[in-house]
Length: 182
Image (cartoon, rainbow, N blue to C red; front, side, top):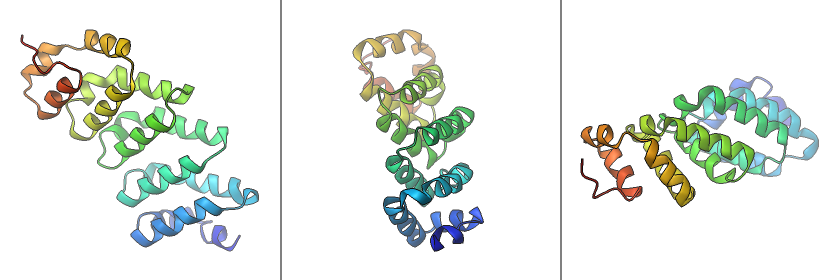
């Protein structure tokens, strides 16, 4: 209860989440916080996810929180945040790890399928950018062969290959298109 009261001003939570020692402490709190205080902590987390997910240690806190979460309401709030900020998160140096984590953790769930739809919709744009291309690589690993074929059919391969972008070339290879000729 004392720990939660120190986070009543969510800036304290954010500051702790963004430092190496604070991150470790927060993740330990997440692992052992009693059920009766979980709702209070959930509100603190949800109000700060936009800031912490874009920082080196903060994204680790976000991943730990979501991984330990058992509340469908929190999943809905996290998914609402992702919906509103998908491309900003996908191209971010640290937040892309949150999207990757959600894609793996929520694979074959309604939330995971929605994230897959976002990726499918923005794949051509995402594969050209450094950080979002990592999401594309994971996406290729977890989708079925039929989904890969569907994805390939939607891409403008000529346009992508002409870009000579190193991230695009890596994605093309992952799709099995490394010997593709115009």
